[in-house]
Length: 286
Image (cartoon, helix red, strand yellow):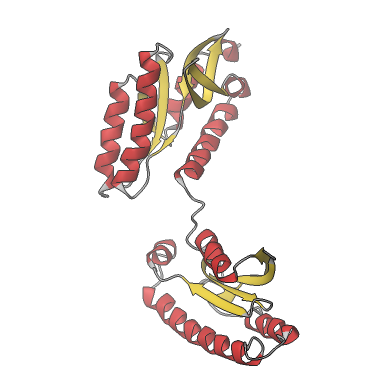
Protein backbone atom coordinates (compact mmCIF):
# COMPACT_ATOMS: atom_id res chain seq x y z
CA UNK A 1 0.00 0.00 0.00
CA UNK A 2 1.25 3.44 -0.94
CA UNK A 3 2.28 5.70 1.93
CA UNK A 4 0.54 9.06 2.03
CA UNK A 5 2.33 12.25 3.05
CA UNK A 6 0.67 13.97 6.00
CA UNK A 7 1.30 17.16 7.92
CA UNK A 8 0.44 17.40 11.61
CA UNK A 9 0.85 19.78 14.52
CA UNK A 10 0.51 19.37 18.26
CA UNK A 11 -1.83 21.68 20.13
CA UNK A 12 -0.32 22.93 23.37
CA UNK A 13 -1.96 24.48 26.41
CA UNK A 14 0.34 27.16 27.86
CA UNK A 15 -1.54 29.26 30.42
CA UNK A 16 1.46 31.04 31.93
CA UNK A 17 3.67 32.85 29.44
CA UNK A 18 6.12 33.70 32.23
CA UNK A 19 7.16 30.08 32.85
CA UNK A 20 6.77 28.71 29.33
CA UNK A 21 5.37 25.44 30.72
CA UNK A 22 2.92 23.63 28.47
CA UNK A 23 0.94 20.41 28.09
CA UNK A 24 0.07 18.70 24.81
CA UNK A 25 -3.72 18.64 24.56
CA UNK A 26 -4.45 17.81 20.93
CA UNK A 27 -3.33 16.96 17.40
CA UNK A 28 -4.46 18.18 13.98
CA UNK A 29 -3.53 16.27 10.82
CA UNK A 30 -3.86 17.02 7.11
CA UNK A 31 -3.42 14.53 4.28
CA UNK A 32 -4.33 16.24 0.98
CA UNK A 33 -3.73 13.15 -1.15
CA UNK A 34 -6.06 11.16 1.10
CA UNK A 35 -8.59 14.04 1.18
CA UNK A 36 -8.39 13.97 4.95
CA UNK A 37 -8.33 16.54 7.71
CA UNK A 38 -8.95 15.56 11.31
CA UNK A 39 -8.28 16.55 14.89
CA UNK A 40 -8.41 15.06 18.36
CA UNK A 41 -8.44 17.02 21.62
CA UNK A 42 -7.92 15.88 25.18
CA UNK A 43 -11.25 15.22 26.87
CA UNK A 44 -10.05 14.56 30.41
CA UNK A 45 -8.78 17.67 32.13
CA UNK A 46 -7.59 16.13 35.42
CA UNK A 47 -3.99 15.98 34.20
CA UNK A 48 -4.14 19.65 33.23
CA UNK A 49 -5.40 20.82 36.62
CA UNK A 50 -2.82 18.66 38.40
CA UNK A 51 0.01 20.10 36.36
CA UNK A 52 -1.24 23.69 36.53
CA UNK A 53 -2.67 23.40 40.04
CA UNK A 54 -3.07 27.17 40.45
CA UNK A 55 -5.41 27.27 37.47
CA UNK A 56 -9.21 27.11 37.57
CA UNK A 57 -10.31 24.16 35.39
CA UNK A 58 -12.89 26.41 33.74
CA UNK A 59 -10.08 28.32 32.02
CA UNK A 60 -9.00 25.21 30.11
CA UNK A 61 -12.52 23.92 29.48
CA UNK A 62 -13.71 27.27 28.12
CA UNK A 63 -10.65 27.61 25.90
CA UNK A 64 -11.06 24.06 24.63
CA UNK A 65 -14.74 24.58 23.79
CA UNK A 66 -13.98 27.72 21.77
CA UNK A 67 -11.08 26.05 19.99
CA UNK A 68 -13.22 23.02 19.14
CA UNK A 69 -15.73 25.32 17.46
CA UNK A 70 -12.93 26.92 15.45
CA UNK A 71 -11.59 23.53 14.36
CA UNK A 72 -15.07 22.36 13.36
CA UNK A 73 -15.49 25.45 11.18
CA UNK A 74 -12.04 24.97 9.68
CA UNK A 75 -12.75 21.30 8.94
CA UNK A 76 -15.91 22.21 7.04
CA UNK A 77 -14.12 24.96 5.10
CA UNK A 78 -11.08 22.93 4.03
CA UNK A 79 -13.19 19.95 3.00
CA UNK A 80 -15.46 22.06 0.82
CA UNK A 81 -12.79 24.30 -0.69
CA UNK A 82 -9.79 21.99 -1.13
CA UNK A 83 -10.54 18.36 -0.25
CA UNK A 84 -14.01 18.02 -1.79
CA UNK A 85 -14.48 14.46 -2.96
CA UNK A 86 -16.70 15.62 -5.80
CA UNK A 87 -13.69 17.30 -7.41
CA UNK A 88 -11.47 15.14 -9.57
CA UNK A 89 -8.26 16.79 -8.37
CA UNK A 90 -7.42 17.87 -4.85
CA UNK A 91 -6.29 21.48 -4.52
CA UNK A 92 -3.08 20.63 -2.64
CA UNK A 93 -1.60 24.15 -2.50
CA UNK A 94 -4.83 25.55 -1.07
CA UNK A 95 -5.12 22.76 1.50
CA UNK A 96 -1.51 23.22 2.61
CA UNK A 97 -1.92 26.99 2.76
CA UNK A 98 -5.06 26.76 4.86
CA UNK A 99 -3.38 24.28 7.21
CA UNK A 100 -0.39 26.60 7.58
CA UNK A 101 -2.71 29.45 8.49
CA UNK A 102 -4.55 27.29 11.04
CA UNK A 103 -1.33 26.24 12.74
CA UNK A 104 0.45 29.59 12.64
CA UNK A 105 2.04 30.90 15.84
CA UNK A 106 -0.56 32.36 18.17
CA UNK A 107 -0.29 34.58 21.19
CA UNK A 108 -2.80 32.62 23.25
CA UNK A 109 -3.07 29.86 25.84
CA UNK A 110 -3.84 27.29 23.15
CA UNK A 111 -1.21 27.36 20.42
CA UNK A 112 0.28 24.97 17.91
CA UNK A 113 3.80 23.60 17.87
CA UNK A 114 5.69 23.59 14.57
CA UNK A 115 4.24 21.56 11.69
CA UNK A 116 5.77 18.14 11.12
CA UNK A 117 5.59 15.58 8.31
CA UNK A 118 4.78 11.89 8.61
CA UNK A 119 3.96 9.08 6.16
CA UNK A 120 0.84 6.99 6.76
CA UNK A 121 -1.15 4.16 5.23
CA UNK A 122 -4.30 5.41 6.93
CA UNK A 123 -4.41 9.12 7.91
CA UNK A 124 -7.25 8.60 10.40
CA UNK A 125 -5.39 5.80 12.15
CA UNK A 126 -2.20 7.87 12.14
CA UNK A 127 -4.04 10.75 13.82
CA UNK A 128 -5.12 8.42 16.64
CA UNK A 129 -1.60 7.00 16.91
CA UNK A 130 -0.07 10.46 17.23
CA UNK A 131 -2.69 11.51 19.78
CA UNK A 132 -2.13 8.39 21.87
CA UNK A 133 1.63 8.97 21.86
CA UNK A 134 1.96 12.71 22.34
CA UNK A 135 -1.18 13.48 24.34
CA UNK A 136 -2.22 10.27 26.08
CA UNK A 137 1.49 9.36 26.41
CA UNK A 138 0.99 5.65 25.79
CA UNK A 139 4.80 5.24 25.65
CA UNK A 140 4.87 5.66 29.43
CA UNK A 141 4.51 1.93 30.08
CA UNK A 142 5.77 0.05 33.10
CA UNK A 143 8.80 -0.95 31.00
CA UNK A 144 9.49 2.71 30.28
CA UNK A 145 9.04 3.61 33.95
CA UNK A 146 11.41 0.86 35.02
CA UNK A 147 14.04 2.10 32.58
CA UNK A 148 13.73 5.50 34.26
CA UNK A 149 14.16 3.85 37.67
CA UNK A 150 17.20 1.94 36.41
CA UNK A 151 18.74 5.15 35.11
CA UNK A 152 18.18 6.78 38.49
CA UNK A 153 19.83 3.86 40.32
CA UNK A 154 22.75 3.93 37.87
CA UNK A 155 23.30 7.61 38.63
CA UNK A 156 23.30 6.84 42.36
CA UNK A 157 25.87 4.05 41.95
CA UNK A 158 28.26 6.15 39.87
CA UNK A 159 27.76 9.53 41.51
CA UNK A 160 29.70 9.19 44.77
CA UNK A 161 32.26 6.65 43.63
CA UNK A 162 32.34 5.45 39.99
CA UNK A 163 34.20 2.33 41.09
CA UNK A 164 31.06 1.13 42.84
CA UNK A 165 28.89 1.60 39.79
CA UNK A 166 31.43 -0.12 37.56
CA UNK A 167 31.09 -3.30 39.61
CA UNK A 168 27.39 -3.69 38.73
CA UNK A 169 26.50 -4.85 35.24
CA UNK A 170 23.43 -6.15 33.45
CA UNK A 171 23.49 -9.92 33.39
CA UNK A 172 21.31 -13.01 33.20
CA UNK A 173 21.15 -15.01 36.41
CA UNK A 174 19.95 -18.58 36.78
CA UNK A 175 20.53 -22.08 35.47
CA UNK A 176 20.60 -23.68 32.04
CA UNK A 177 16.83 -24.20 32.14
CA UNK A 178 15.78 -20.85 33.66
CA UNK A 179 17.45 -17.46 33.26
CA UNK A 180 16.34 -14.01 34.44
CA UNK A 181 17.80 -10.74 33.23
CA UNK A 182 18.77 -8.26 35.97
CA UNK A 183 20.05 -4.69 35.39
CA UNK A 184 22.54 -4.58 38.29
CA UNK A 185 24.49 -7.73 39.11
CA UNK A 186 27.67 -7.93 41.18
CA UNK A 187 29.97 -10.93 40.87
CA UNK A 188 32.98 -12.09 42.84
CA UNK A 189 34.85 -14.24 40.39
CA UNK A 190 32.13 -16.21 38.64
CA UNK A 191 29.80 -16.12 41.63
CA UNK A 192 26.81 -13.78 41.64
CA UNK A 193 26.65 -12.37 45.17
CA UNK A 194 24.50 -9.24 44.94
CA UNK A 195 21.60 -8.02 42.77
CA UNK A 196 19.69 -4.75 42.54
CA UNK A 197 16.43 -4.69 40.58
CA UNK A 198 14.26 -1.51 40.52
CA UNK A 199 10.58 -2.41 40.16
CA UNK A 200 7.81 -0.04 39.08
CA UNK A 201 4.55 -0.76 40.92
CA UNK A 202 3.12 2.73 40.62
CA UNK A 203 0.24 1.81 38.32
CA UNK A 204 -3.21 3.12 39.20
CA UNK A 205 -4.83 -0.25 38.58
CA UNK A 206 -4.59 -3.00 41.23
CA UNK A 207 -4.66 -5.78 38.66
CA UNK A 208 -1.67 -4.33 36.83
CA UNK A 209 0.28 -4.02 40.07
CA UNK A 210 -0.49 -7.63 41.01
CA UNK A 211 0.26 -8.98 37.53
CA UNK A 212 3.56 -7.17 37.14
CA UNK A 213 4.70 -7.66 40.72
CA UNK A 214 3.50 -11.26 40.77
CA UNK A 215 5.56 -12.01 37.67
CA UNK A 216 8.73 -10.98 39.52
CA UNK A 217 7.76 -12.87 42.68
CA UNK A 218 7.37 -15.98 40.53
CA UNK A 219 10.76 -15.45 38.87
CA UNK A 220 12.45 -15.08 42.24
CA UNK A 221 10.79 -18.20 43.63
CA UNK A 222 11.97 -20.22 40.66
CA UNK A 223 15.51 -18.94 41.07
CA UNK A 224 15.43 -19.73 44.80
CA UNK A 225 14.18 -23.24 44.03
CA UNK A 226 17.22 -23.73 41.80
CA UNK A 227 19.61 -22.22 44.37
CA UNK A 228 20.47 -19.63 41.73
CA UNK A 229 19.56 -16.47 43.65
CA UNK A 230 22.17 -14.90 45.95
CA UNK A 231 21.35 -14.07 49.54
CA UNK A 232 21.67 -10.33 48.94
CA UNK A 233 18.99 -8.99 46.60
CA UNK A 234 17.52 -5.48 46.79
CA UNK A 235 14.34 -4.32 45.05
CA UNK A 236 13.86 -0.52 45.11
CA UNK A 237 10.10 -0.10 44.61
CA UNK A 238 8.08 2.71 43.07
CA UNK A 239 4.68 2.65 44.79
CA UNK A 240 1.24 4.01 43.92
CA UNK A 241 -0.23 6.78 46.03
CA UNK A 242 -1.05 5.55 49.58
CA UNK A 243 -4.66 6.71 49.26
CA UNK A 244 -5.21 4.84 45.98
CA UNK A 245 -6.96 1.48 45.64
CA UNK A 246 -3.81 0.05 44.06
CA UNK A 247 -1.78 0.63 47.24
CA UNK A 248 -3.15 -2.52 48.91
CA UNK A 249 -2.02 -4.51 45.90
CA UNK A 250 1.41 -2.90 46.18
CA UNK A 251 1.61 -3.88 49.87
CA UNK A 252 0.68 -7.45 48.93
CA UNK A 253 3.52 -7.68 46.39
CA UNK A 254 5.90 -5.98 48.79
CA UNK A 255 5.19 -8.60 51.46
CA UNK A 256 5.58 -11.44 48.96
CA UNK A 257 8.99 -10.11 47.93
CA UNK A 258 10.07 -10.05 51.57
CA UNK A 259 8.83 -13.63 52.03
CA UNK A 260 11.02 -14.73 49.10
CA UNK A 261 13.99 -13.30 51.00
CA UNK A 262 14.41 -10.02 49.12
CA UNK A 263 15.20 -6.68 50.71
CA UNK A 264 12.85 -3.91 49.63
CA UNK A 265 13.09 -0.15 49.88
CA UNK A 266 11.53 2.92 48.31
CA UNK A 267 12.91 3.72 44.88
CA UNK A 268 13.97 7.18 46.08
CA UNK A 269 15.87 5.89 49.12
CA UNK A 270 19.31 6.76 47.74
CA UNK A 271 21.07 6.18 51.07
CA UNK A 272 19.80 2.60 51.33
CA UNK A 273 20.59 1.76 47.70
CA UNK A 274 24.12 3.10 47.93
CA UNK A 275 24.76 1.40 51.28
CA UNK A 276 23.59 -1.95 49.87
CA UNK A 277 25.73 -1.57 46.75
CA UNK A 278 28.82 -0.48 48.72
CA UNK A 279 28.89 -3.46 51.06
CA UNK A 280 30.52 -5.66 48.41
CA UNK A 281 33.06 -3.13 47.28
CA UNK A 282 36.00 -3.03 49.66
CA UNK A 283 38.23 -2.08 46.73
CA UNK A 284 36.10 1.04 46.17
CA UNK A 285 37.20 2.44 49.53
CA UNK A 286 40.92 2.09 48.81
